[in-house]
Image 1 (cartoon, rainbow, N blue to C red):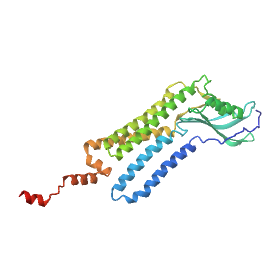
Image 2 (image 1 turned 90 degrees about the vertical axis):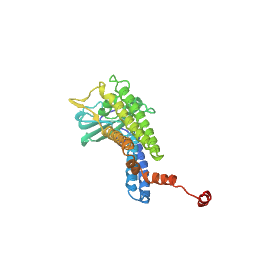
Image 3 (image 1 turned 45 degrees about the vertical axis):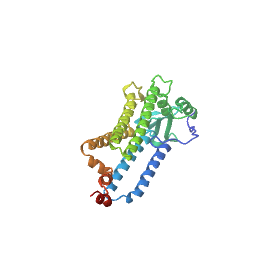
Image 4 (image 1 turned 30 degrees about the horizontal axis):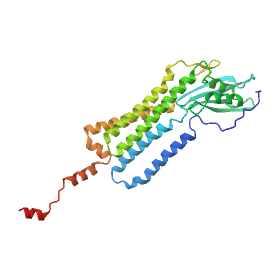
Length: 307
């Protein structure tokens, strides 16, 4: 590869935050939300507000659990540095180099300051997957064959299986465990919705607590890589350091929200059951059921006959 040769890209680059899978998940849950909003005018009184809060809160939890599986900003980092641009070239470029780690792989971003330097447009974003169906080393080898810029290959090389840093094993295992735990949280979220609709309110509250617990477990699983030794990613005197990204904090917030919602349901079940039934639109139904059970029809014919 010589200076001035443009790298060849046989396929489109993948965005580091949103990809097709994330958009599909969001569209599906938005469809459910819009469908509910179409029928909400048919619910009368204060129950309309309660139904809206319950459904939208439940959909929010579900879409976050699924969407963060495909996002690429669980851990992010940026550094601005003067670095070599290509192999076999002495040309230096000033660029922002970004690393974005997700549960399914990582993205390396290279953006020039300014974008047009050395007669080229420096604006790259490359994805390297480590999911079960992907081969990270193969993706890295393809990057070498396509002639990706040196900063991207340097960062990606740190995560290969042959690297002495051993970062591939650390991140891959922790990401797989975090993903599996989130899918368990999704299953418990479905169970909680079924229990709320049966209705078995207190057990639905317990399952909300379990959902929040599994979401927190996924965060603990992913954060284990922060406790291990990580090879420094240096560009001259500049060091690329990473921190928890938006998906990590969003998962934490929704997990805590599940804890609050589940604890509230359980507490109301034991201390104010009438208020809980009112919120779930069960108070009137139970009253009517009780009234139907307590009302007794007396046949005058048998009463007169007995007298």
